[in-house]
Amino acid sequence: MTFSIRRAPALSAEVARSLSDAIRSGALAPGDRLPSEKELAERYAVSRMVVREALSRLKSDALVESRQGLGAFVAAEPGKGLFRLEADASTRASLRHVFQLRVAVEGAAAGLAAVQASDAHRAAVARALDDLRADIAAGRDGIEADNSFHEAIARASGNPYFERFLSFLGASLREVIAHARVNTRARHPGRIMAVQAEHEAVLAAITAADAAGAEAAMRTHLSNAMERLGFGPFASETTP
View 1: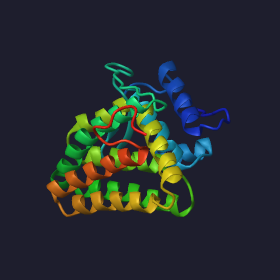
View 2: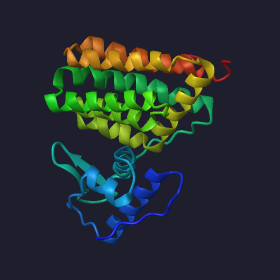
View 3: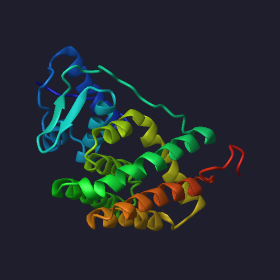
């Protein structure tokens, strides 16, 4: 089949739209294996990171599913059982609520990942962090790599519902990460490396199979993100 997209600022959204159209039209049928990230990147003339973001969008729309070691496939019943938690990143209350939820859920996922993750899962988490390091070194925002890091940890937990939880958040999670990074740069110049150190601590605990340490590191990271946004876990909406 032929792949094409309109050029637009949000390339990942355009790639996702094109693949979604192919799935809904039947050009890509249920159970079909999608081309690899490398192949899709070449066909669309975009980076592999853009492709990963597009696939993440399709997963959140219940159109695509990942199979460990095999790649991405069209869901057996595309769109069935779709559920998404949408948050408005423009409101303080919504941001706070999303982060409170993430602290609880992603902390538990990181703890499980420390004891359940396979070597392949740990390698995937490490690769995502490598991508984030590269983005920071190049002065990029690292939003997609950050999202991939958290998704890789959820996947490494061995509990598919943690991964589905992040997919349910969909675009809201990406929006929240973007908002947090903008605030970190604006409110705490030079603190981006401190944020990266928090990511490193999570990976180190998972690599060491330290469940308590991984959960604590993830909870600390997300709680600190809340502080960087200007409110703590129990702050009111009017907190300055």
